[in-house]
Image (cartoon, rainbow over all chains, first blue to last red; front, side):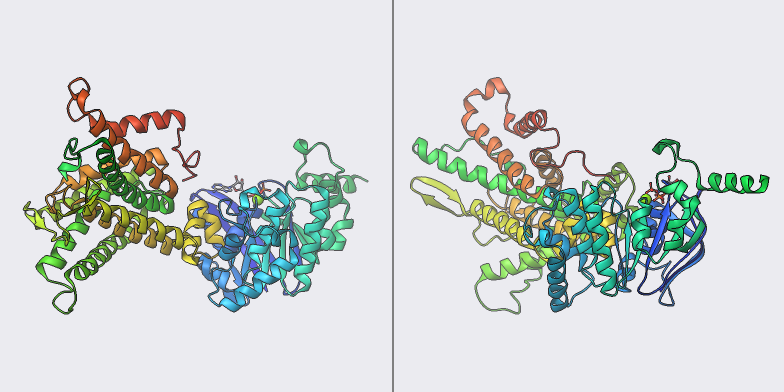
Length: 264
Length: 327
Ligand SMILES: Nc1ncnc2c1ncn2[C@@H]1O[C@H](COP(=O)(O)OP(=O)(O)OP(=O)(O)O)[C@@H](O)[C@H]1O
Ligand SMILES: [Mg+2]
C-alpha cells in the first residue's frame, strides 16, 4: 500500500506546489487522482518516484511510505526496485531506441534474464501491435502505440504499483477506451494503479476510489462511483462547464453551491 | 605530432601509386580524427559536456604507455612471447589507466555540476586540460619519451606505393573502436547509456543508474582518447615519442570533425573524421603546386573550411540532432 501523508513540495526553494497532500493507494485497487492543469498531479508522481531532484524540487514536509517503508528520500532506481513504476506524462519513450530496447530499459533494474524474457513475452501478448514492430525505432510509432510502449516498459519489472500520468492525453476516443481496458487488465493481474487523469469520466469509470486535488491539496475524495454521480464533480469535470479556458475553480463551484444552499 | 601535416610525398613513381599512398595517409589521419571525435561524442552524448580535456587525456595515455612499456618493462618482465604482444598489452594497460583518470575526473568535477550550463562545464574541462597537461609536462620534463612502437617507421608496399605500418595500425585501431562501440550500444549497459543520452529524467524513471552511465562514458571516452593519442604519436606523425603539448593542438584540429559530423552522433564522428582527414591530406597532396597562392601550410586550414561549408548546409552537423537537447 502506498501512503502519501501531509506532503509538501517546494520547487527552487520558493514555489510551494504541494501543500499537505494526503492520498492512499491500497493494494489491488485503482485509485484516480484528478485535478486541473497545474494542480500538482505530476509533482505528486515525482515525489513518489524520486524525480524531484531533476526539477530542483524538494519534499519539505510529510512522508511517502510504500509497504511500510519510507521512500521519499530514496533514489529513483531503489524506488523502482521496491516495486513502483510509472508511465510518465507525455509518454517519454526513448524515440531513438527500438521497441525492444525501450523494453530493455524498463527491465534494467532486474538482472534475472529469465524474468526479463518472461516479462517481455507478457508485454508482447498484451500489446500485439508492439510484437509486430519489435525492431522499429520507437519514434516512428503512432501516439497510441507509443503509449502502449510506455505502459509495456513500465510493466517490465512486474510492479506492485503502477502510476500512470494522463495516459489518455492526446489520444482518439477509441484508443482511450483501449487504454482503459488495458489498465483494468493490468489491475486484475494484481498490480495496484494510481491513475492520474484530466479525463475524469474515464478514470472514475474504472477506479475504486478517487481524489480531486486543487492547488496542491485534496479538496474532495470518495468512492469513484459516488464521485462520478456527484453534482459538483459533474459540473466541474464532465462537460457542464463553459469552454476549456474559462473553467471555474472547483472550489468556486463548491463555494457558490454552499452559498446557494445557505440562501435557500 | 607537429609533423601531422606532411608535405606532398613524391616518392611514388606514378599517379596511381601516388593516389594509393595519399589515400592511406588520408584514411589514417581521418581514423585518428574519428577516434578523437568518438571519444568527444561519447562524453558529450551522455553528460552534455564539451570536453576540452581530450588533448590532456590523449597526452596522458601516451605518457602512461611510455612509462609502462619502456620504463617499467610491463608486462615484458613477467611474460615471455613476442615484443609486439607485450606492446599491445601495454597499450591496453595505458588506456585503462587513462580510463581511471576519466572516472576520477567525472566523479570529482563533472557529476557535482550536472545540470549546470554547457559553458560552465566546458570551462571546467578547459581547466582540467591545463592542469593535466602541466602535470604531465612537468613529469615528462619536456623530453620526448620513447614509445618503442614495434613497427617503428617501417612500411610496406602495395605495388609501387609505400604505406607506413603506422597508417594501417591507426586505421585498424579506429575500425576496432567503432566496431566495439557499435556492439556496446546493443548491450544492456549500452542501451542504458543511449536512453540516458536521449532523456535523462525518463532514464531515471526506469531505474537506470545515471551516475554509472556518466562514469562509463567518461571512462570509455578517456580510454579512446588515450588510444588516439598513442596512435597519433607514432612515426611518421610524431618522432616516435611522446610529444609534449602538441597533443592539444592535434585535438583542436579534430574539433572540425566533431562539429561536421554532429556533436552527438557516433556515425557523425566516423564520417566527419574521415572526410576531414581525407580533405586535409588530399588538399595537401594535390594542391601543393598552388601553395604559393594558397599560402604555405594551407592544408591546416582545410578542416575548418570543410567544417564551415558543412555547417552552412546542415547547421547541426551531418548526423547531429537538431537543437542539442534540453540541458
Ligand atoms: N520544475 C518546476 N519548477 C518550478 N515549478 C514547477 C516545476 N514543475 C511544475 N511546477 C509548477 O508546479 C505546479 C504544479 O505542476 P504540475 O506539473 O505538478 O501540475 P499538473 O497537475 O501535473 O498539471 P498538468 O495537468 O498540466 O499536467 C504548476 O504551477 C507548475 O507551474
Ligand atoms: Mg501533469
